[in-house]
Length: 381
Image 1 (cartoon, rainbow, N blue to C red):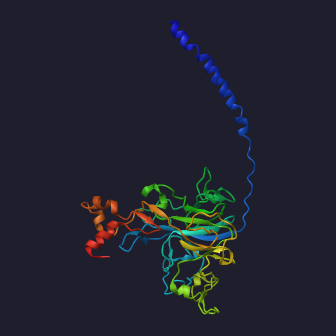
Image 2 (spheres, helix red, strand yellow):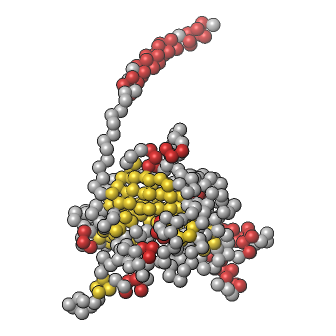
Image 3 (cartoon, rainbow, N blue to C red):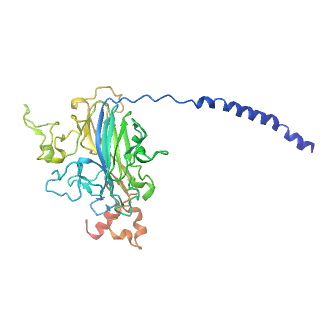
């Protein structure tokens, strides 16, 4: 009994010591409850705009026939036309252009391949996105999310105005306050580009569920925003031969052709892009992004070097102040593709072919070895 009582005595000073710690820990908490100072407003050196829409757009994953009937994607508004519009000239203006676009009844223009949208903005500038949800009000395929609300949420860029700029369903914000809009509705987001680099964008309307629990990301509703060096200029680097030829000028004194990087589309060439630059991705007169290519040529002012010093990084690329080519490559998995051959769904061969099906993609394109082997054995494709 004596030993039992003695073993409990040291607990008393220990308890007192713990109470002292707890009491002391509560004292600074009062200071932590102070209202934080108002954040310093962000100063935009320049503001560029992008008119972006979300739409239902099926596409082919490869030439063997794998497809995405449930496809959803972002596009610039002037690259989208009514679903019934199919003129001989893909750039012909439809009736009511540019406002007559009905949600659930649109498609990419005929000469535009489905590819992830890429927007660009220079460091220190702001990106204003005028976003319209043109998705159908009901899913067009069983693999699509049932939720039809959509947004353009950029991961990592600073918000300029309110929490609505995040395009996310945050806290108890509802309706227009959370930046998610229903089919037919529009909203404007403004982001500040603080640091160079590439940032992923996607919709927060249906962020989970479906294939890979990725929501609308699995169906293709994602994009990239690249923050370029300050004062950079962006030019298209992959165009058709006919388009490049239309920008040639042969008046060079040395006798060789040169490219007019300021050349603009005429109404006869492309009504949908009339007065837009052919090669420059940003219209310098309106500060509107008019091209969303995956690849680009990035230069300094007046297509020259960048006006600041970059530390030497490697022997391969010692002069980092020179113009460079840019490649945007987005890997995406769990795409729920409709496979090219019925053998992928056959009870006898499904297990064997499962690991070689078209399931991993790069920029809306796949190259699973299974379809290639089957095409070879079947002597097709």
